Image (cartoon, rainbow, N blue to C red; front, side, top):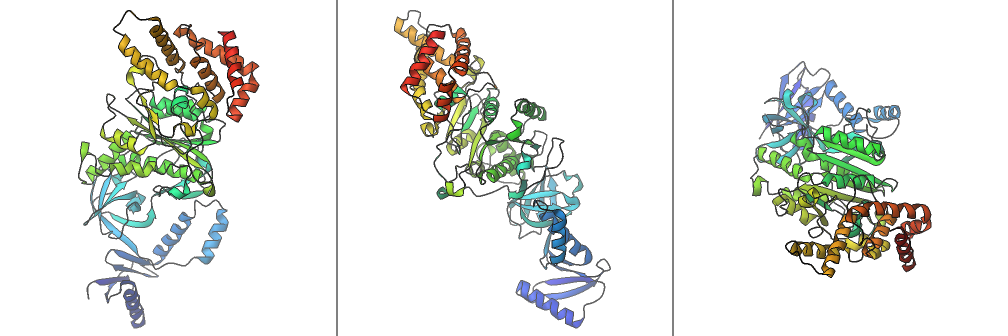
Amino acid sequence: MGRNAILYSESAPRADQEVRFQAFLKDRYGEDIALVWKESHKYAGGFRLVVGNEIYDWNNEGRLEQFKERLRSLACINRDIITLIRENIESWEPSTDPEEIGTVLTLGDGIAMVDGLESATYGEILIFENGIRGMVLDLSENAVGCILFDDDDEICEGSKVRRTHKTAGIPVGDGFLGRVVNALFVPIDGKGDVVAQDYREIEHDAPPIIDRQPVNRPLETGLLAIDSMFPIGRGQRELIIGDRQTGKTAVAIDTIVNQKGKDVICIYVAIGQKAGSVAQLVNSLKQRGAMDYTVVVNASASDAAPALYIAPYSGTALGEYFMEKGRDVLIIYDDLSKHAIAYRSLSLLLDRSPGREAYPGDVFYLHSRLLERSAHLSDERGGGSLTALPIVETQAGNVSAYIPTNIISITDGQIFLESDLFFSGQRPAVNVGLSVSRVGGDAQTKAMKKAVGALRIELAQYREMEVFTQFSSDLDAMTKERLKHGQGLMRILRQPQFSPYSLHEQVIILVVALNKLFINLEPDDIKDKIKDILEVFNTQHDQLCSRIDTSEKLTDDDIKEILETAESII
């Protein structure tokens, strides 16, 4: 016989009981196991059977703990709790499933190496002494690597650990709208608890191709520079990339503000940011009524690396919950550079082999399995969508660094914000040459397609001409005219934060600008003229504005009306 089973109880088992124990062990483990009895007065009214690392608690305390766990698993169901308790008391029976217990070998920096949990699975939640939770992140031959979500001061080497047989997940539901939560979706805004409607695993398979449909509905940012040249569709993954302090977060927040009244749920995941910065952001959203449809997930810079690691997955799980109900969702990851750094820290502490820039070899898979969950579901699946705007920080504009190139290859395009443009006063500082949307015109309305014309080409020509003519003082009239037209186009793309344009306003501005009605104005006067033109159209030509917004078409007569009205104002 290979191993022993130790039976702890007040008295030795009778002969018939011992036969039943042997039959149970034979059936469970498929081999003859020697039964060793040890006297113990700790297990009054029952017994405790230990087979290796597996424990069968069949005493009053163990059965009570099973019942408590059953009620905890039902806590997220939105039903009358009294009825639930009554039903479960009447129908509940203790199970004979073993409780697998492990031991902490080493502990430090939010990482615990645990021995004795041979059957633990990747992503499973473990419970340590004093109720501290952790998640399995590494499966090695001799031990299990676990990241801790709570303070590890109360854990030490030799502490006991038990499996929960549950994959890491979060509570989800409509009650989280307008709230600020941490990476485990515990509210941190002081407004009390949230009544959850369901429980969802943070790691989930991406929707298969057969359950998706093309990205063909626009998700307007309200920013003329983006909606006109790099349109974002519902279900798309568009990267926002640039150096530190170039307005990346401002673009994302403007996009959230622009979703007001458009039935889009927004999720903002702050990764490694200062708590004060997130508080200011939340306050800005509240002032503009955007928190009503927004959830802020905050894994701040003061949090441990495990919280920064799981935060984007938690936010995505909530987004998928709404998407599968047929809703349109926008999720912003700010930013994935810090997310990769947190994962690198965890991986190095888990003794994984470092690769390029010390990142582990699976860092690409880290972000691909996250971003692939964004989709536009088929009508059979409800037609909901999850649009992702990941943010990545570059160093000195180096888009060819490891993490930026990884995420560029995963996403459907990128909006590159250039430092030189930003410091010259161009806001948003979108680099037209390096930015791209791989969905393109499919996510653009017919009115916008017709109005935008050759804007990108004209801007590219202006940028090239500007470089070649900066050393020349003698320019011909045609070149001067092109330069002035280009300067005017750059000026119309300047847009203050929290000042989104509606669809008809963008179309009107583009039609007027591309027909060179601003060419005789000084660049500094263009902003005031745009304001005057839009005010006239919103007050005196509301039928035209409504027609563009609703039918999303732009006729030749509409263009004629726009130009005639604009000429009379300019």
